[in-house]
Length: 249
Image (cartoon, rainbow, N blue to C red; front, side, top):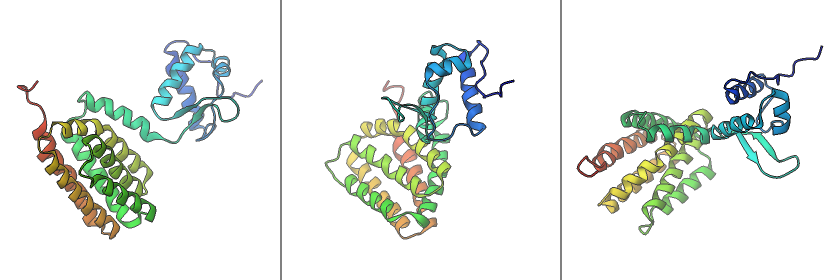
């Protein structure tokens, strides 16, 4: 009797979800690892006994979750590859739920503050020269008074993401990156509503420089305190007052 391969046919109800279950089983069993390619669609159709439409739907879900990356072309480097970019999937998931207000804003702010405080504390002890250089580069870009609000927001996001990555904890970094990227568009909307943008930008620049200095000095307590106060002050003193009222809508 043939040895089970883990790719046995699946029942036809909710087919694409069952395809996801089979792929998850292969990952949990260690038969699929980061960098491995999934079997071609045609082969998966035969192995699992499902339609190509079900396979493609499952692959779309996995790509959206950041589990699979599709590589176009032919040869060894083409096909659907297991990836190690979970922040992309987390960002998309959080962005939708934040847009739908499934997570109250105070909860989002508290989560950001807790995650980024921890990341900044860790970064203060182990940020590399390359990461510190990247932070200085972003500070210089944000110091340009001619910078548009959109450009400032992009560099602001990159600044916080770089700190998260410098912290060294991959799970915490991915969660931090996902939350920060998920609020990128709401923050830009806030920037666009501000009448006193120049003053707000000046405050943000000063706070960013102070955060960087604490990290560069290796002062974990100061770095954590500054990041948390930076996040909470902006949301409570700038973002919330800038929200449109019923009369504005």
